[in-house]
Length: 109
Image (cartoon, rainbow, N blue to C red; front, side):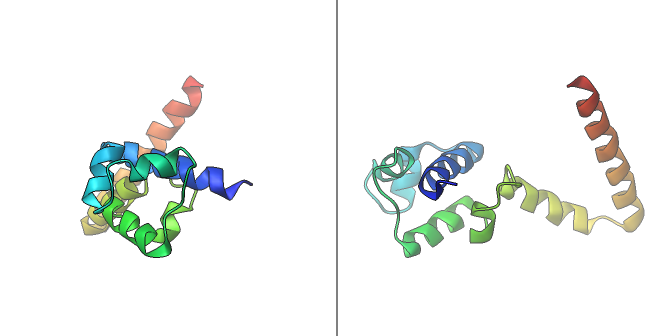
């Protein structure tokens, strides 16, 4: 696996999921307006400290940045918070609903 390519693509994916432009993210991190664009275009990489700021900005844990199984770690985090707040019976209902939705999606493909 080419980790350099993965990092750049993953940053673009997570930023897009959050619905923010590369310019706005760069400025929010206190960097030049082209900072994130340079990373996504494979011209540079952030320092570790800036990587941690990126994760804070995206509201994800650094390990989730590298977890390819999580397409949208921010959304998963939000879902889990709300799911955990439900009583057990409602959690069961929601799990059945998710199963049905996944079966429907599977049958469409």
